[in-house]
Image (cartoon, rainbow, N blue to C red):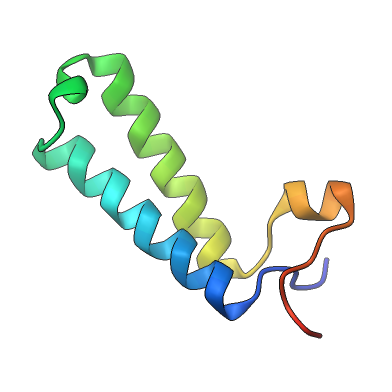
Length: 70
């Protein structure tokens, strides 16, 4: 599979992913008291961070989308 996540998209994914993981693990959101919400935030954060690092989004590939130039 070729890269389909551009630079801006990658930065946003990494920042949001790290923020979600940090909020879930270290608190900061009143809604994060429920363990299901914490696990969900960690999982979503990991998905965002991994797709940002790999510059590859399976959903983009499935729908034929690209946010990078090449």
